[in-house]
Length: 320
Figure (spheres, rainbow, N blue to C red):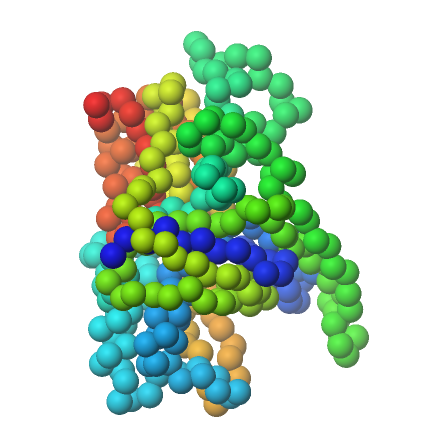
């Protein structure tokens, strides 16, 4: 079954990155200043879906002291969500049970669907330069409706919520400043999902603070389809590229974000001290590549990443 899934925030959200609260200068990049990213990672969406499928199917035991799958339910849980954690560098197609594919996240407002994209329409590329480019304008802070071409900025969509406080106990680094976000008006996060388990609408938690979201699903055969009118390769989602891009395109406007995962298990009866994986860097959604090489396009076609919504891109030239 194919669904259009929407996530409506019920409270401010904090989508974490590489920086977390902790001792300044420690190996885990502790800081007292944390600002939410605008979108959750695709891997976080995968984790949320796996947990919700297990919850709705009754395979997840949830009590005050934690969450776990009872031994007699392991086989059913593995059939529903698989037993693997997503790995960015895995060369084989991973099995996530009923979850067959997750589309790239985008923003929905009524009938409009907004993707993040460098504003190359306002500043077109000509002879090695961006025409009329003003360095005081953030060319990257742009969201475009895939149907009408309407452009919005972050300020039109996201409301920052700042919180300054002091952790209980008054220990070193106890002061902190946190910037979360809310969505303006009727904006929602959205993605397309191929799933053989018939999920029902629910309330789910997502993000570093476990913020609540209203999860709604509507059966749909649509896809997130966008073609850049200048024939630029456009990243619809954050993407893992292992080639040096300077050697594989004429020009690029990009941004990078870090990617790390937790590599140890959550315990119900032990203190949860999580370790993080090695840091990888992804090219952020909205980046564009002008006249990309065939090798660059091939490098993007990482089926394992694309299965959960990474490495989604559009490129018109040569596809017609």
